Image (cartoon, rainbow over all chains, first blue to last red):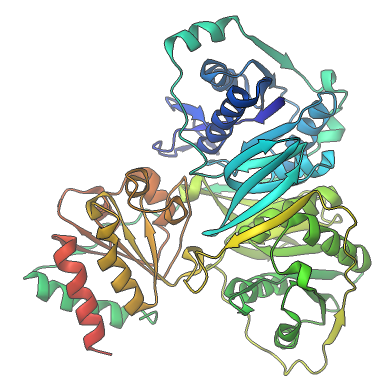
Length: 255
Length: 327
């Protein structure tokens, strides 16, 4: 079984955001595989352990993304592709076009990705890519079973659990709860060094800059207004509870 | 030239979702004089709700209601929606940023080779175009986006609970309600086998006006009971921190944070939550934040409007009692 996993390198979720010169500063930031993509990588490796085959991880992003791909190789993926080109904007239309161009040349049975990235959070790229390729998809899965060229998945739809049968090849996006990602073992890290990490540009994919002209433009970037600490209530627990209820009733119509 | 704008409506528990009214309001912001607004309703049973939609300043309602559409499936819903959009050729398509909207919108954007701006919390007209504000890094920052080519169609998803909902403007009598014929596909690539409605009857976390959330301090699955009781009295939804989910006290579908859901309720009551950065990202845009924690140094108090330093197992039942009392 051939599996391709789409991953993105993101800020660790414990990082604070600093804006410098109109852009988000990457100084001293710890980068990780986007947590949802990490579930997708783990799932691909587990399916390989069950059914055999090959796992390819691919990322569209700056050179630093190579580190995320190396981590995926150390977890157990077989080969990696970094599509890195200054001409590719971050716009979801552009990234999905690039991924679709890459995947058209690469037969696969299973395409996995994260439900959304914890930085941009739009959750578009994977589904757009599946649509461009004309394959079915199920988003936000918490379980994947594969047998006889079909997948049975459970989708988390705002807490409801929907079970679907899907013909492969198909895309599934990983929701929390799908699995518990492994930490790369030392042996895996050593092996990863010998595995193939190839770099591709727009030219390798037969695309021009005009093909990936962005559809959206960012005109402003802001930090939210800082919340200030309010006040601690005083008195016995019962007094504090009574005080809080009275405050909330006065200040909010929701109660 | 006049344009048509489309809003894809959603239902939950037999009624229209609150976010649908918010999405209509958002789409109306985009309209110029002479533009038309079309509401799209797909599902089962939904036909009876078309008349209700008609009253919200919508020029047409297009409805596709068939027993095959009882459960959401991109393989059945998308061809219907695509067929409708081929007929109306909209300038923009607006969705709620919900389980369904998040899934369908990128399909529409891919089909139209269009811009999509996701998870929008506000929009305004500026210089003949529209500016869309959306949180990034789960709200640690926000960006304002524009569609690059204003001529092209574009797709928008609207985050629940942020844009004031549309109010009914007419009795809807002048609005055309048009059925859309459903033709079952010969061979579906994906089939829904089963749906377990764990969330039905409950208030959706992202749409809730009040959220009661528990963290590691709740200590066990059992420990969520007093939180649920408080939530029941308030008509609130229950949420959790990653700590509580990782510890197995509750389902991941309740998780609030940069991984998990971002919520923006009117009131957020954090019980036994320390306030890790990744959790704060998911809730700090709530209007009023209440924190209950044993540790007076917990970071959650730095963002809370009101803090109670104390044992949640003592304080939460007292709150429930107080809220019941004054009703």
